[in-house]
Amino acid sequence: MKRIIFLFAILLTCAASAQQLKVSILGDSYSSFRGLIPEGYDIFYPHDQVDVKEADQTWWGQLIKENGWQLEINNSYSGSTICNTGYGRADFSDRAFISRINYIGNPDILFIFGGTNDAWANSPIGEYIYSDWTKQDLFSFRPALAYLLNGLKGLYPKMKIYLLLNDGLKPEIGESMEAIGARYDVPVIKLQGIDKAIGHPTAAGMKEISRQINAFMAAEK
Image (cartoon, rainbow, N blue to C red; front, side, top):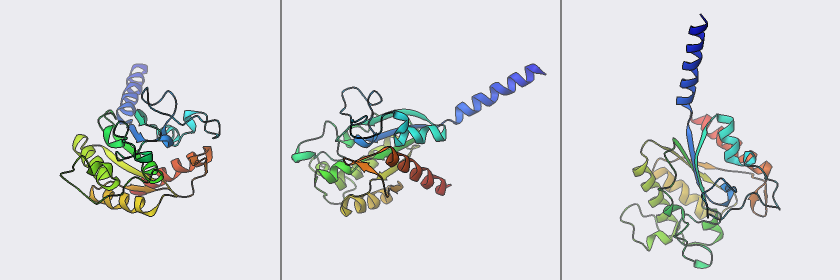
């Protein structure tokens, strides 16, 4: 009898392990954390002016813990834009989201939390372009976001993708993200009422981000 119970426990453990979803993040400063992003990337958290001091306080840390998921890769580069145009019209192709699509591992779920720096840097919005992108096209937000989602869909056809839309951004960013997300069947989670300090989520803001993502995903089921 004891042997049967032991074998049953092993089977349950294996089943739980097999069901554990792997999660990756493609992000900017909002998702960065020292020691948990690729070496050499610029970070923001922890920061002496914001009360997020532990990785468990981040939106993704809470989300993963609450859902029993496993972190695959956090590919978040502080200050990065989705397109190749950064602050002061600098070429950000070394850190842009579109340059990092091959470095997210092999997750079941990918959260893309970007667009904030494209808005703050006043990167060009550009036109809606869904194929045959030129190098110059990718220096604008709309074609770069379409290029990003198209590339991810091709590389990871079984992966579930969510776009996270920060609150307080200029309307063109949100409108573009919703239109392009719809084109590629990628849900957009529109965040609201996020508490921030120096433009970045506080511990309370991080908790609210996690709560809103959980609520959105629960409503999908």
